[in-house]
Length: 308
Image (tube, one colour):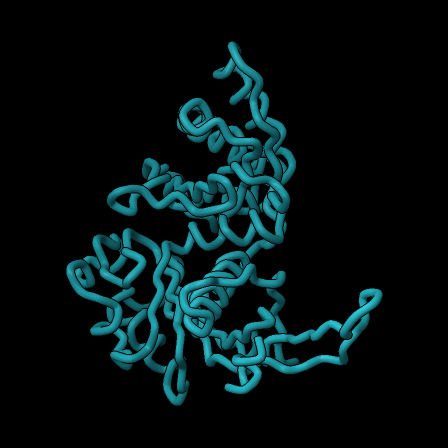
């Protein structure tokens, strides 16, 4: 830590004494020591960017909505706009589809022309920047497992219910990505548009439909992974709420008659889950870069939004 302080990356704190002998030395990371950013692209057309420091505080959050555009070039133009003028050491990009940790796009249904390219090329990123990339549901799963509904539990499934079914899988506190970065990819649910009349009758019909679509594949995942907890997220969970959680627990229990089923909870982080998860990954990458590969455990991330 003395070496980091000499480089301006850590700040000496008042010393303290632990019994006889020399007083102990204390340090904290300099919050702005490493310039990090997190960029989240969502299938619905929302692109969000925020800066993050080593104290896990996300600031300067800005959002662009490209829902009325094709995702390519909509995502790309929004990302380029949000990143203009940002001088970063580390950037984490979270997006739908299959993407490697180094930013190679394997497949993204919403922007098929991106396949085979690296995010450095697509987003005109500086070649010296340290880039990390994740599926947006995976980083939401990471956030819920660290600071959300699954905090304190090492093995869990975050089930994102939207146009399709995608699971973020956390094993022993770490994301499971799979050999081809497709772990947790589920079926297309082919459900009606979410812009329905939110009456009790329609909400009840939606929940019944979702339970019928989700219970069997979720039971298969539970039987394979044996998680402690299921966390529900995405627009399906937002609309279904406690009724969906209760009915889905009963339906999954019927599929798992021979064994005890894990608890099912609604996610706690809502629309900010992916941004918070991307911030966690950025702090892990940033701290590893200045500590010779040894990442520190990030503090619980927070988002500081400027009042509009």
